[in-house]
Image (cartoon, rainbow, N blue to C red; front, side):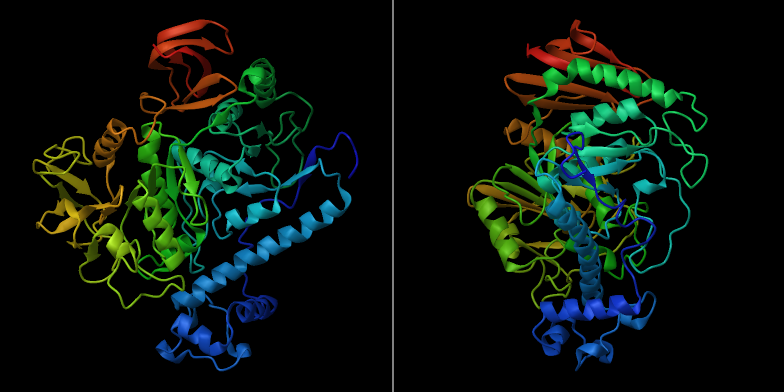
Length: 559
């Protein structure tokens, strides 16, 4: 089929990482890990220094002495050892993917494209690196079932059985991550119902293709209830829904083609940082579910931007930062000189960088520095230092008060609870983490005891904000309003809770997507005049978006 005109492309493998298939502890993987380490380090002495193997008498004098970091064993508690093993395990999967793509490319026409179906959110694999082996990104968008969260803990212990709620902001984040892996349109390759909603949501966030799984159900096996046609040949409700979606896509495709999703804010993250953060002893069994993992922290920050319909592009340390006037980095846990220099250059040239707790805490080997965090040039960039070292902890809710002269939210009453008992001017934070010492920066916020909790430092033509706590909704409402007043970010407009708005533009067209994740119809107030691409009617003022549905409006005028 390599030259067949009806073959568009190829999907390699199926859901890399599913069924706990990334981190293996067999003899073959141990030898593979040793081989991988020999390419990374010139000698065992260099490895011992990187890992701090002197601790607990774990120094190695020969490569063959190095074990795999078995879960719940002393050798599995060295953060440097664990992080390198996680990197190795990810690279093994990527090498396996490359083996398959190399075979296909030897025989397939150059026009045939290669992808795989990534399943969110199995973050044991560095999908940014995996993307380099693919022509375009595809993922399986299961919106409600358990697959929407990591199902393994970092140290190998299985999590309790939990059914995860539908969190539309998390689905949007994963869409954005998939788009960002190649900074290009992506596909959804599998769904499990909500097909019309998923289709418009995918398109709204920059997707270009969707495949419903599957055409016809089967009588046997693990996925019997998945078909558009039932196993006995009768059309299912999904088939009827698919017919409707197909007709609508044919109708609006000419308008959508040539338009793209244009991000406004960068969200800086790293798979290395995520693995290191979740290895930390204070989070021995963290997952996306319980709110303590790196990915859940990332989602929390993202959700605040999502609520305001701010278009976001996830970025890794190797991406170009200069295209974004604001970059949010929920946790820059690992730091090296190259990244620190790039961040300093970004802010010095006018960018606004906002980071959360535990940033600049460790080096790229997952070891603490002799410096007080944030380490390296970050201390100069943020104009602050931590008091008491780089500790992280999860504690009781504690009040954070904005400074009276803060550039936003000064003197406002904002807290996490609708009926707050917090004193006037206080935020409520569920995860107090760091006390800061200002070293040239302005104090942005204080803990209840008066100690600095956040700082703002003017650096070159830009600003660097360090937050020693995880902010809440009220904080971000004020921050985003401040950034909008300064023309530092754009938004697709305010919408009621549960309704998402995005804009695609290009070829002289601007399209507004309204995606209603609520079950009930929801009214959305619009400014300007629009043409509904499905009904072809002109609309303005208040429009109704049906529950679990969407509207696509071409912007005729903004006033």
